[in-house]
Length: 88
Image (cartoon, rainbow, N blue to C red; front, side, top):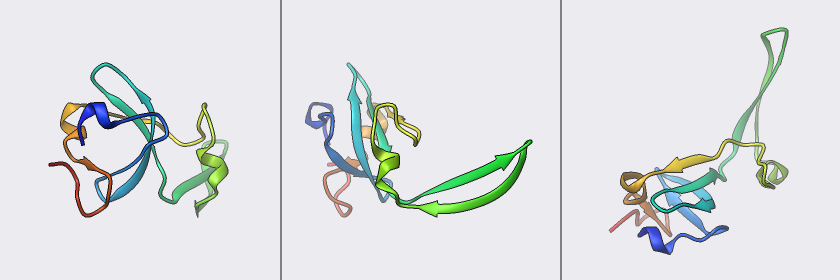
């Protein structure tokens, strides 16, 4: 994909995972991963549970309950609109 193809809310693929664009900067794109993610619960510094969730409420924001990742110009080259075609 090209930088100018990204819009907030656009879904794209990168690294075999599906992402949603959450911000477009002058030279970077920010996104959240839409794949199931790990939820870790801890108490007093000790992990008490680990679960995998695909609960869509974690993807509602901003702010988002999952981390936003910054894609620079090199990362953007590896992005595509389908899982089979990443980049040009």
